[in-house]
Length: 204
Image (cartoon, rainbow, N blue to C red):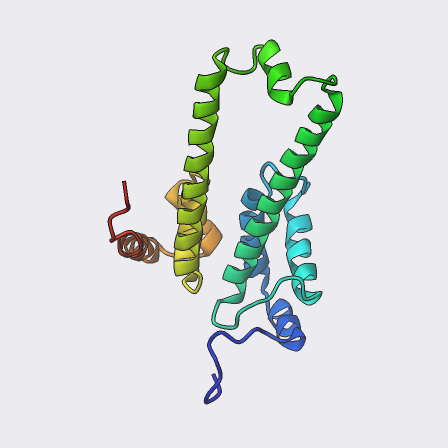
């Protein structure tokens, strides 16, 4: 790093081009393995599609690579974001499609209730849905904190990806190209980091 250069500096188009050209066959294998999990439930059809989309978004300036973050780690985070965006978009699309089929004067919930796809007790169902939504929101905030904390640690990034997708250690080590010792050390860093993030007691 040049003297006085900020760790938070965003990469230039030329630096992104250089990073892409520097990707080895092994790097691309790892990215495709990670991509296969990032696209689950999304409208991306194959790993190469979401890898290419992450590259295009970066080259086009829609996504930005902080130079303090390893390029592969940045690519994984970008693909995870694209997959999440796509899943949310699909859910919104399905909701709109269902709303279009609902007769005038009825709500989507009423239709689903009549089809026995919802709990018959409307009040209990409302509480259940609200509680689930709040839990999902808290869980996403927590997950974002963890991923941001380890953004510069590529080995822990692989561990997090593996944990989220319930992969066995052997698959995580294969994807990340890390040894058993490196994996075990990354797991310890992960546990210590999580403990640090949530060291303050949450309000009840």
